[in-house]
Amino acid sequence: MDRDRTGWRDCLLAGAVFLVCMAGTTLPTPLYGLYQEKFGFSELIVTVVYAVYAFGVIGVLLLAGNASDAVGRRPVLLVGLGCAAASALCFLAATGLGWLYAGRLMSGLSAGLFTGAATAYVLELAPPGGSERATFVATASNMGGLGCGPLLAGLLAQYAARPLQLPFVVHLVLVAASAGILLRLPETVRERRPLGTVRPQKPGLPAQVRTVFAPAATASFVGFALFGVFTSVSPAFLAQSLDVHNHAVSGLVVALAFFASTAGQLAVNRVGVRRALPLGCAALLGGLVLLAGALRWNLLPLVVASALVGGAGQGLSFRAALVAVAGASPEHERAAVISTLFVVAYTGISVPVIGVGLLAGPMGLEGAGLVFITCMSVLVTGAAVYLLRRPVGAART
Image 1 (cartoon, rainbow, N blue to C red):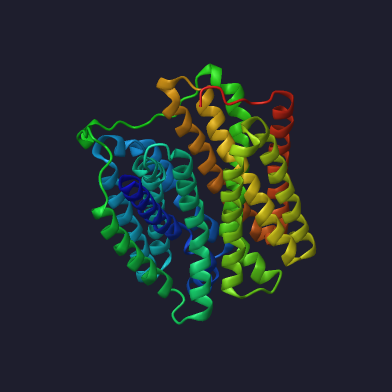
Image 2 (cartoon, one colour; image 1 turned 120 degrees about the vertical axis):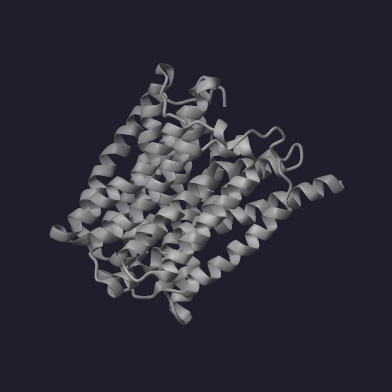
């Protein structure tokens, strides 16, 4: 019993560290408008600053995504916390646009290091027989952390002094506390190898995975693209079109999308992968339609509804996509296939968002948003139709 209690305590502490790191990656979301006022850059630059994060994540996932299997979980996570601290320091020192790029890049590196290593660490620290509860802890820590970042920053920016400094000071304190916790937790990798043995994970797609991968990757791309738009340009839309200048409200709207995604991921166990992927696609389409309505009629309730429905669809579709492609992959190529899926997903967070930024100049945010919604709706509808005709199973999960 004591061993179980200790295991769950360590599992929850590792989850808290995971949450703190991921919260830092979305912390600047409700602050972009303030940075625009301070440095005088366009909406396109906001989207590029945001997208730099995705490039950092993709780089780490491909080059060192499996590093913790060799050198251990704790060393990789400590480096990830160091990157998170460096990101916060860049934003604190920001006197120009270059600091924002550097801060977002370091944030992407921290997320890339944490995504796989922290998930594995949480699962390994749980006592025997607790994998389902540990999966919940890992999922809630990851997506919940992403939701807590804009919520925390929005509240501090709205109701406390020094809105461009205090959120990052608070995060630095939390990162320092997380490092102290991590140093007290046990290492779970028994046979460690030198860092030099780590090799880049090349994206791969065996022939037998391709029919499953295409619709799963499409749904993942659209889900991450929707998140990208919410976390990069939704605060500007709320301020410019809805006259909502409350940073706490902006942060809450973004947070709701991530919290809904957590619920969607957890629902996959109940509805099953076969139904979760098309249901996720349908919810993503619903979220896009609601967002189009919000852009067309300038209604805040539709923005909130879009965040909730689209977020749930992203959670359903992405977790089901992971299970489906992992189950269809040969064991010796599974890591490469999953890496490929993550590359597609994080491309969705970056490329479409930059497209919205490019179109925002000549068309305005509303016009650019409607073009984005049209393109994403075509993609996700095609994936849904394909999945209804050829349902995906979860054969060797």
